[in-house]
Every structure is written in C-alpha cells, then in structure tokens.
Length: 331
Image (cartoon, rainbow, N blue to C red; front, side, top):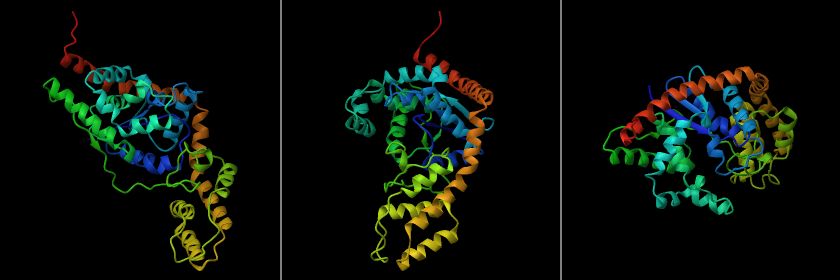
C-alpha cells in the first residue's frame, strides 16, 4: 500500500474545479492507499500573512473535505499547524537548500511579479515546506497539478540531497500520483480556461452555493452574440458552457444544445437556465452535507483530534530518526 500525501490551502471555499480536479480522485485514492490529506494553513500565510478569519477558512475546507467523501477512518485528515514536526523538518531542510535554486522556482518568480510588496522568506522557502509536508510521512506518491510539478521535483532533490549528505538511504524520492483516468478540467464562467476563486467570485460555482446564487452566477456567465458560422469553432466562453453542460448534465441535454448550436438556432438564455438547474441538482447533496457538518462542532473536533494523532505518530517517528541521522543526541 503506497503512502500518498496531498494538501490544500484554506484560502476560501472549494468549488467545482477543486472537486473534479482533485477531491473526487482523493475519495477513490483512500480506498487503496495510505493517504494523508492536510489543510495547509502554514502555506496560506505565504500569500495571505494577515488572514481575516484563518480558523473559519480551515473549518470550511475541513467540512468540504468531509462532505466530498473523505473518510477520517480510511485516511488521515489533519491540519498542518497541528503537526509541529513539519516545522522542525522544514527548518532542517532549509539548512541544505540553496538560495539560487529557490529563487529560480517558477512559482516564486510569478508570485513576486504579481505582488512585489509581499516578497517574504516564507514565499521563497515554500518548496522546502512542501517537501517537509511530503517526506515527513516518507510518502511515495503525491497528486500534483501542472503548477506544482516543479515543487515535487525539488522535493525529490531535497530528499536525495539529505540521503547523500548523511550517507543514508532514508527518504524515498516521491513521484507524481498517476490517476486511473484523466481529470476533468472545469472552466470558468467568465470565459477563462480554469474555474478559480482568485479571479472573481462570479467565475466559480462553490460546493456550498445555494440555488439562487448558482442561478445568478450562471445567468451572468459570458457568452457571445451567437453562432455567425456554426461550422467554425465555438468562442472560448461558449465552449466553456458546453464543457460544463457535458460534465454536469445528461447526454441527451448536451446533444440537444449541440444540435441547436449547429443549426444556428441556439438560445443561450435557455442553455444557461438548463445548466443552472443541473448544477443545482449536482450540488444539492454536497450543500446539504456541508450545512449538516458545519453545525456539528463535536464531530469536527473529533475528526481533527483523530487526524492529528495519526499524523503525529507518523511524523514523530521520522523526526526522531532524522535527528539521530544528523547527530542530535541527548546527554
């Protein structure tokens, strides 16, 4: 059974892109792997150092993890800051991480370009913190998106460097988790290729959105003036709506609107109304479960406590052995 580690930052509510991009696969993963899923509250401070409601954001992600089907009995679900061993390993890895390689990281360069007023040490050393999250459990596999592939490569570098420097074969070099099927990419309502909460609230459909909010967002979705030449490729905003329809509606509904488009008789208003109702139907069990869990603080507290205990058992063993390898000893 492979050890799999993955985390998500608590910077807001989860949306359909998160569910189809990772959460749906996480639920399958926990059936056949030893999975550690964590809420990366330390990581969130690199770009949001003064969050308005860090605890509330953590609770949202925890609730939505559970509502999506992650099971605390089958996998280890914990909060990053509940594991002090992560911070210690992060410090130790930083002793052998080089400024040049950290500064060359693509995501670091992109972040400082986007926000030059917040170039902090945490942002620079993000890859070593991510490496600590992974190798603290001696993970073999990590589910990563395209934007995290370089970080995973750096994790392998740090693990390999530790082994080489201390002449041990201790940390495995984790590889990207290969999904059994291609992940569904959910586009944005604003015409962008990716649904994202960072672009605008109206770009994403959140799992907790109520029907009225969903209808309002979908009806405001970007389209065009209509098919001037139906034989030509659809514009990106319209292609996005068809992609959502294909994922969330029935095949006959999708075929109906494809036919209307090809004939040049499509009414985008009708298509949006149908899409909104299909999203509402899909979201309903998640929304109901989210509301139920949000009100059950005893269960959430129990889940977090169980996750911290299981994660601590794994991490403490690693830290003890790492300290011994480096040469820390008690008098």
